[in-house]
Length: 563
Image (cartoon, rainbow, N blue to C red; front, side, top):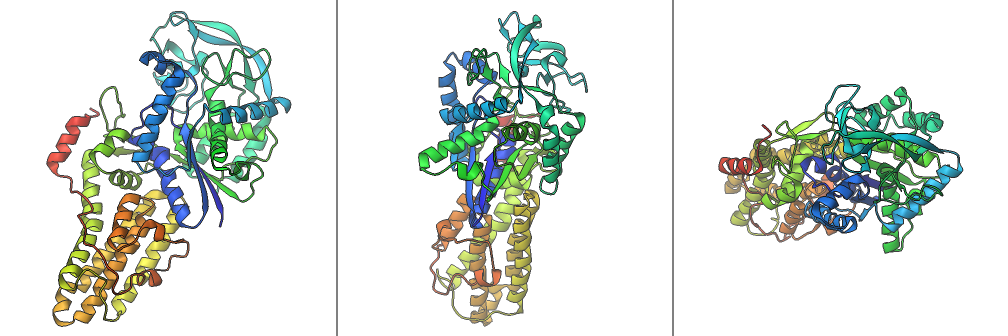
């Protein structure tokens, strides 16, 4: 058994997750975690809310509550949404925890001791109207590189260039919109990234065979442009106070302590479970570490965070595979809660079960390029793939067997060349499905999964047990026995994507996912005979609801248009 450490990018606590957030990091990480557990690996799957920084301060002020109370409220809101989406975290923690504070202080002290921290007096933007220094994300202006007029003070999301607030053209306060800004001097601490550039470059190049193009190209782009010293402190109240004399009135920059949160949240898990966080993070040679995130987060996880760990000269676990995802849009535009445009995760599960969304999102994951959600596409996939291919197969097989033979796996008959051919093609498909899942090629994996379901439909259509039973009941029994075993196979293979539906399918034949042992060496020849004659089954209800044109129109009206 190997150990697999999986982390999903930490969502800002103040944001309400939409479908783009789900497919950008959270859902793929869950699918992979479920798959690796089924493969027999020891898995630790970590995520949590990113709670420090100005977004929390401003959000709390708008709602008229203390920032800690605000973070508590939205942490629970996030957790409920992810529970509803069936995300199987081993620990869903928070970056504001004492465990993360301890880790952040330790790592900072090591960096400082090793000479990678520098004190500087810098010029920073001060909003006269807001009566405060403005952190980079709360200054908006025109990017000097590409001309995008909504660039933030830390990064332009259009061209991904890293910025300083003073780089922006025509800057304004994101808090108030004020342009009454001044540049004032203030003292801060910097991480000396140029001193770590050579070591970091060597490490990134060693990752090329394992990282998708999206992640590797972004990291290389940063390195080719040359790394700059990075400010790791801020003039804020909400955050971890800096543990260095003379800087007690500063807090650590959220992008310094947030990635350390992966380790801090692991420590939360370890403290609660009585296990060792060091087995996963320090001198852990047997751990394979996989990260999932949107492409806008890649620079911080491929450059800043690894550099931070490198600078400690300790034996930290570095990411082996970094899965960077592109963006999911809503009908080509942006999701916007305030403008009531697009469906958000907490609303989605009130309209249809989570597995409908999980399947659609993974089938259309924005891996190589952006993809777009629309209710027409959603309905088409649900109706064709889930209802028409998978659901229809399960329903027709169990109803036919129950009406013609009885509610148990039928006995009699022998396999023919038809079953041998089915086993062969299914084994090839299963092997490819596993290959793509291991390689984090989720759209390809889902194509194979659907193709496996189609093979079942092709088999029953060709075998025609409803006709064969009239003259050769024994042969019909063998065909239907094969088909019922296919239901079990489909349920097992679909479990990482649709855990609830898979559980329902297994329940129909008297099983549950807990009965499924490691699928690492999945042998179709054996699996297709797993349910023996006489095994009881239940016909059950229809697995999926067909989405009608009227329902599509209703959803479009309810959740708005991007136009």
